[in-house]
Image (cartoon, rainbow, N blue to C red):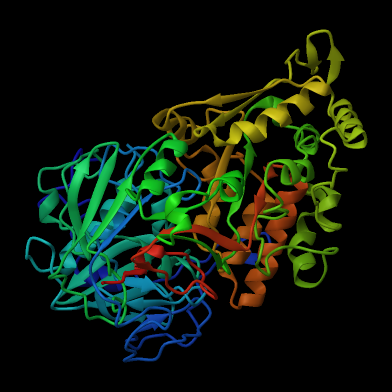
Length: 625
């Protein structure tokens, strides 16, 4: 593999039209009872279109003027200044040391994608629809293996150069070869990229899911090929890259502050997919490990947007002059997104957590009811499923399509998978529920642990001790009482607070016992599903599979979800995934709430949040005057 990517050194041999035509044969792969031959997206074969959806439906017709949830007449100007909470982004939000956010190496700032355009973009008021952006039109072949884009001739990079099919081909091949493992998932079946005149075609090998083409079209940024002449694509760098997006890098202070400045000459500002977006002149992102200090900056007005994740602070600390005189508003806006999946994840790669009864015993000692009453001011509800607020959350006994998917794997699965889905027990709110503590002790014994003078010891002589890895002190007030409850049954829990870089590195390398993470969920399962639960991702550094889950049955359910021809079938597969995950006790689910709790300085006008599948406050606007 070459060290760098230069214009004269493509990642794959140059493609000819003949090679492109000869690659159209499809391949089919069958796992269990699930056929993985690609099925064309309903209603979108062959002809050039303005948009695509996994299951065929599009809300917006050809020639639409704007998305319905934006303000097309929103004024441009002002500054949007915020600090990314540690649970909001999958990147490390407490620092940054590179602007290359598309490879595994280094910590890039959130929102670096503002510098770039994608061929298509998502509509936030539809579960999975994507619409042409940098691409003028899109066409999918009847067999689903050729996704062709006609580029907009007016598209330009920030240096004035034209965006060409060669730039697109370079971008896809670079990501496939050297991109971040989670970004590469949508390209796993990409066989080649064909370039002809103003057209570029992604050629898949026939094993792709229905979602892969849409993910490929809407998540891969288009880079300037010339910008990487003589530079390694996967290197860390603080040199601003050449993009074509609505913002450029302005101020940059590595590790502490980055500003994105609106490109007033942005080539795509009048596109229907851009109208009403990109309203702030400056988007300023500050980084700090200490949220208390950062909140003080918000109270002074140095930050003008605060997404609150601390129930204590929301209940007790919004009592400062700017609140009283009306300069700051305290808002609760509807959150209709699928609930983010937040919890503490067991690393089952470590032998002490191999038995699900051990994991259940530890999880049972966490007293959510006490925590919600004493620590959270009653703000939250307990998370039970990875799929809260979606139809993929399982309930009742497995039946119908869900049962049909699971049945071939019955002998490989815990019987609990087929019964009522596991739900965390409800305590008596005392913080020392004797019945639940007794249940934890019984589970440890059933898992083969013996209580001795040195603690719980298994047959291999291993002592049960837990280190919970964290990157913010905010959770100490929650974890310390939990540690006290675990101590009552003889299990020591230590909260290990590390710096941001070390935290991210240890997650990427799966070097932890228990770690907290928050994942944003989608109403439509896509390629990232493999990163969370797929067997192959369990040993892929940087994947989302923190638990180290490796089950053939789970792989088959993922395949079924990604091959589903209807939303109903996908939701059935999602429920099957949910059942396996919950029965396995791979995490300790945290909590959620149905609203966004926000502190907002005057000047910023909040946009629509109800009925949206994504929360993106950077598309709000500044009110002049």
